Length: 294
Image (cartoon, rainbow, N blue to C red; front, side, top):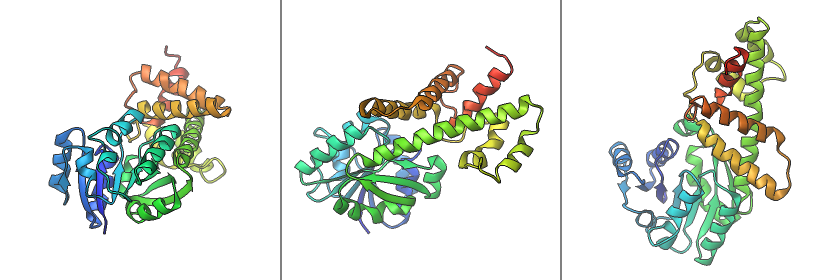
């Protein structure tokens, strides 16, 4: 069992830290909103720290799951950041979906302090976090990954080192690019089925047994048809991720025309009041167009 710190008890981090506590790790938590950390402590065995530095100082593995690049910098850097207090040889694992450039920069900063760093964004959403069934894509040195893999595997279905620092974030970008296209295709297909007078449920029952099958189809078509869009990963966070993808594509020279288009569609969903709807809400936009609403 390891001495672990977990920074960020949001929708994803809260259950992830819970899995670690249930597995018997000695865990210290930090959350920007203190009440959230107090609630976690009331549910699980562990202790609460007032700053990321305090959470990190006696820990072998420090894990973070926060919102954006700026949030990652806030919990790692400065006198109250984890890097200021980590012991030599400790490893910081960032589960945030952030930029590859930030991962590389933090890896260099960590190395200069004789610390380890692994960027390890996750896929699987809120349900994956609750069920301990996340897919985790990692970037960093093999020695650092070897230290943390037994810890993060507690809440992972699949965990793999993809390359040096930043590789985890780049792999997560591929993940989001693929999801964006699949959800838009499914939304168009279901809306087309309705417009053509077909029973969309019957259509899916047939085509899901063939090449059109996808995780999104299996898990989201019923709720999409029922106009239910409260199933986890929100549109505003998907747009944050797609912005990272598009920025990286500009830097590397990759072409992402479909991703850029779907990002525009998500902007329209936000304008419909769907900022906090889940990503399958692209279907709501398609249905609005089908009905001729402006």
